[in-house]
Structure formats: structure tokens, C-alpha cells
Image (cartoon, rainbow, N blue to C red; front, side, top):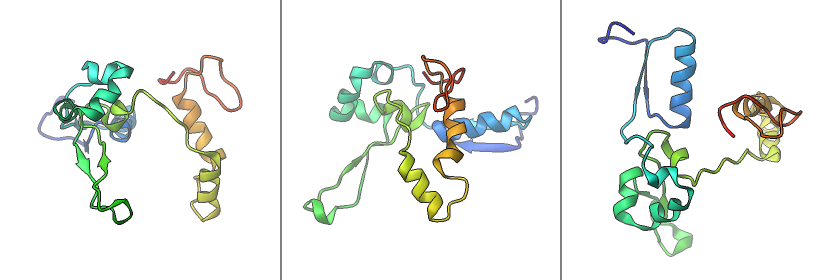
Length: 150
């Protein structure tokens, strides 16, 4: 982008969704500004899997990479406010989840489709999962290879 005074799109938040949207728009030739309030995700709080417990239990550290949000008081939890960890870091909440990747449940996707959410059955979303994956066992009917996630 040569003209820094304008862009086709401004994407707020460089989490999993925002970064993907910005990337896809740029791949199509659009000029994109991607804004993220948090820091780079190169801190050991994010890059060392065992640090996830520390991030969630030490308030001084938690504030460095999360928004430290809480729910409203929960009636069925003795009015307790439940922590809702939301990443304030490049990569968003996916950067503060202990480096875990869990596919959505097939039954959930299929139930959404049955309720009328066209395009959301497991078979519909499977190609997106496969594009994302770089499965060590190689591509198969259920797994992808060559994607950014291992």
C-alpha cells in the first residue's frame, strides 16, 4: 500500500478471525489496515505451553496478554463473576489458550445445519479445516496437509 492515508478495509483485532479476514482481503488485492491493541505474541507467556497456568493465575502477568474480563454475577454460581479470558495480544484469544487446537464437534455442526444454518454442516466446514491443517500423517478424507497449523 503506497498511499498511507486510505485503505479499502480496516480490520480491528488481529486474533484468529481478524488476521484471517485481513489476509484473505489482501490476497484479493485489497489494501488493508489491521489494528491490534495488544503486544506481539513473542512473550514466553504465550510461546511456552506450560506458562498458560501462570497467565491465568498471576494477575500481574494476566494483564500483560489478556483483557482480564469477567462475566456479570452468575445466579447459579453464588453470584460469582466468572473470568472470561480474552487475548490482548497478536493472535487474540487463540494465543492464550495453551497452544491447543480443537476441531468443532461434528454433531454440533450438523445440528446447526438441521436448524437451518445452511453451509454449516460438518461436511460443509470440513474443507476449511483441511485447508488450515498440516497433519503430520498426511492428507486424508478427514485431515489436510500443507496448511499453517500442525
